[in-house]
Image (cartoon, rainbow, N blue to C red; front, top):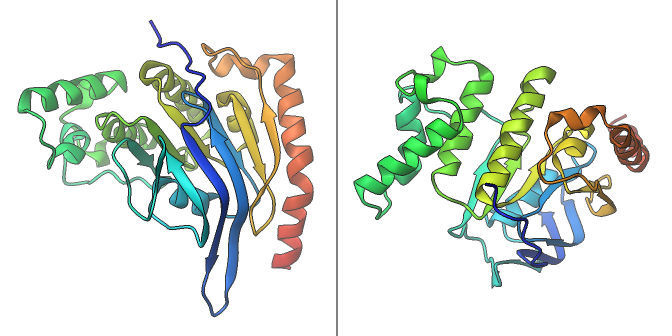
Amino acid sequence: MSPPAVTEPSHVVLNEVVRRYEGPPAIHALGSIDLVLRRGEFFSVVGPSGCGKSTLLDVLCGLVRPTSGSVQFEGRELRGEVPDGIGVVFQEDSSMPWLSVRQNVAFGLRTSELSQKEITERVDHAVSFMGLAQFSGHYPAQLSGGMRQRVCIARTLVLRPRLILLDEPFGALDQQTRLLMGDELLRLWRETGATVMLITHALDEAAMLSDRVGVMSARPGRFIDMVETGWPRDRDSRIVSDATFGTVTARLWSSLRAESLKTMGRAA
């Protein structure tokens, strides 16, 4: 049985977060941003290219300190460190080609203080959960792109994160594979009860997967719309045939179109 949705309002809190990069040229990349991620929700971020979506993820996971403002995770302010309890999956295939599937999945636990029995159990569960059991001895070169990304997700899963951050994890996959990987991601979310934040360019992906979608402006990125989808927790990719799905994606595009045109104009 899937764990129940938790409604605590403040798993992650961003308060007046701004991120600037020194030049030349100096770049005001992000903010000011205020955001509360509710514990156990699936939240997605969409926005035009270069608006600071990945910067937001880096700030949120502690890789980058905000220029001003504060970030709190489970009541603790982050000050440029990645705390326990946060797992990150990036767009690039980060599987190590010289390691098997099982060795890749276990890699993040190599310095843990867990017993070998606990490590084995976690790896077994993650490999099985992601549908990789029969490929556990294979190497990344022997796998499809979708399967390699499953390996990367499984490597995060064994860490048992309470907050999962995903930066365009399915960007290199075809549309059909993206939909099926979205189903796997929703299943992972329900199984773990984790809070999830997904960065994506795909409006249909954001609409299908999310409880809420935040729409960002052109740089400096800030939130200009918050869209509640109203989907049930046990949703899957069949939700794309729901009449409301078109309404959600239309609102996202309505909010995003002018910001994307600003970005194109700046590039021109």
